[in-house]
Image 1 (spheres, one colour):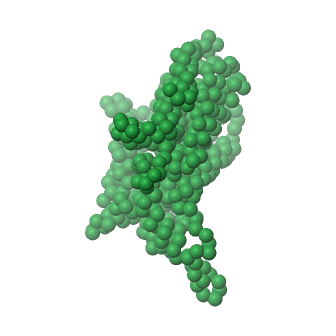
Image 2: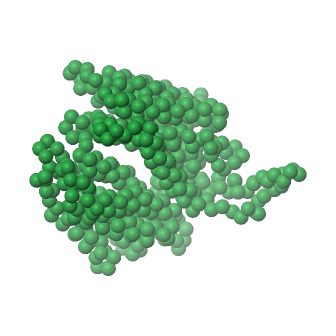
Image 3: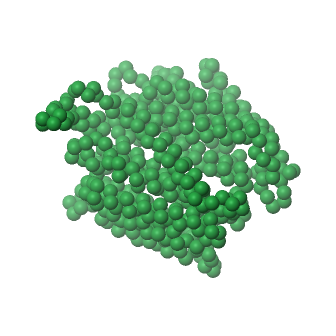
Length: 462
């Protein structure tokens, strides 16, 4: 057994023993509560910061480096794995606040198993064992390693949410339903904004190859989500309580509009066509949420700003499709440029901001902040600041991907002087980039097999 593989096995043994040996000392937890009144101690704060660094920053960056087959992928993911191991140990060594059995602790076992599997797969692929049975199973290991690596940021996001909920003792008993609704829907808005950013900056060629417009996929997702909301927001057979009718009717609007958006997403000859239906759904949803009745004044203000932000996202999307793009797929669809319009960043950012606002508006959060006399202005500004940071990180990762996928050519190549005013027109760079995009763009998100070049091998380790 090689030294790296022995290290991975030892780490797995430590994590497994830590999960089974750790006890939740709940003798200080008041009856009916899920956390003790003690403050969070320094060790637990270090655990939180280290895990955010590892799972929130290092692993997503390493994932992108793995997709583009950078030599920095393995060192960065190794650093992340070591930090994750340290954070796991600290999470079981803290004093101060005590916790009842919770979802964060249980989900940590699953996340640890995924991480251990990734490390073992990465070490195996790094050994370049390609003879005999290894040559037959290697492609499946590469595929599994890629799928798990791309799923890890999403799973890590869920675990970080569980961590925040557990630290504050939220989402228990009667609060569970509305808590799930806020965090699931809020995360969905953030995920939608990130997907739109990916398609905007690096996914246009892939989208054209599918033969579908962006609104086809948006409308299909909206219709599916509306069907789920229609039959889950009310306990059928029981009385209509609180906002059941509003939530159910919102689900009905979603699947009705989604079906229309799917129908309008193609021209008569079968070619993809843009439409405004998904943007209208976002705008209508924002209007409905801005008038959502609340029990606390702070909650009313936060929900109102959430609704206005969602309305702004829908309105900006309408302006983008109808006036900025004029029903085209992108601003450079005809080869006149290679950058997105500044207006196109508005919709994905506002979707991310609306997601944070909705996740931060649960009943227990509002009660806690209201009791601490925190104004809605301060709280909303903090949530917007978090949105800016997340959007910055996403943009940086996509820039990193594009820098490897389409390295810029020297400015002196393929440049013609157009006119006496010194304006420059780039010809060859745009054409080459479009050709490269057909081969490279989003390839790493769908397949991680060898690229087919003689003598070239790669590995991906998360």
